[in-house]
Length: 544
Image (cartoon, rainbow, N blue to C red):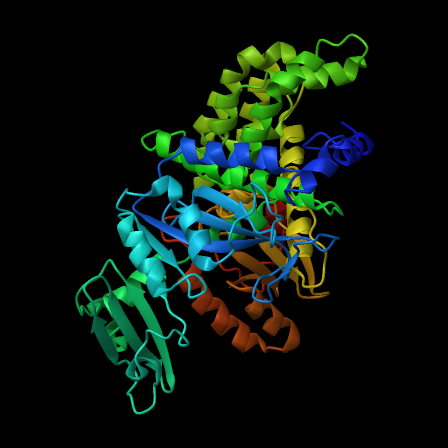
């Protein structure tokens, strides 16, 4: 669709009946999205069983528009936004429960207490009496909460604020205590820990899961208690979800807070969907591991049915219908296994009538690619064989054309990489950028270069059996002799300094012994100053 239509749909998107919204807002501040949000949370609860360790924390959906319950949290990246309490799995980062903080609700069915104890109790209600452990920070932690969770057969581990009246003074004050020391306090129900990570600073934790004074030996001289290391390992469940949402986010700038909550629901739904997919396909070799690829396939599958319907609409333009039909009928398995096929095969266009015979071209390149990489076969021969396979499938192309195509791609690739590596430049993209990255470390992607000492001008040397071998060495011609260098820094030093002939010959002999591959039968031979004809011929052959 066009950008104009996309913006029109966003502006028109609503999640409730506008005619009855004013009456519902008298009882519920979240009325514009209450129904959709409750359905989403219910599906999250029923679709996955959380692990034994879960985390409770708050998320902040960035929003700077007008909203009665907008929050300011300086420790969050966005600082301003809508606060959402979340219950997430500490290992898989699946979000199992959500609750939007809307402040004090009007008297009625949606009125609830916003105290930390009550928030935790509402979030853990779906997993009550399951024996799981809850990890949370000091905003939620209290001794009363630990006892209430034990009644629901749930253990708790969390940090404690020093202003709690149940804490003894010897645990709250770090004065007179050495670093990396620990004090334990035991009760019938829980364990209290006061740890000194550095001078004049202590960390206090409470746990109803641990009942001993075990020190984690893997922490070395820090001598951290096992309660501290367990808390560090399980405290980041919600924070990781918040980070994943920000990495690949569907959010757009908006002045309507219901849209902000809707974008958060979409981001969380994509994370939960990938967790379920990976859990159900642990033993599959075709499981999509990268989140970016999974989101792309997920979007295609969600729109596939709609695209199939639109492809049969007669009033649509013919080209638009063709594109819609091609997207809707694209084989998902081919998308999943795209990385397992040879990447260079996707650089050449194939007519529709020859797609069934493409296996001949695929086999040709797969057969010749190892020889091309090893340097034992020239690029020209490989391109000639590839062109023969293309012509056999109805594509009129020659070997030099294939070679020119590859050289053009390499030239564009280097230009974009050099541009992106310079600081201050805006990042350039290219349809073949990721594809060419897969060839970056291969020898035929980094051909040798020569320097004309007369004008200090770099000249590209095309790939050859000699230049393809090894790790893509660089060469320069000095007094009609070949001189090798291994780094750009050495090349820059050569340009800045004026070396004598004796120094060059000494460097030449040393680098020749270090860099010339002993397994290459066609290694480069040093040329004398009097062999001007031979050197010029060799240079001409290489540049050809």
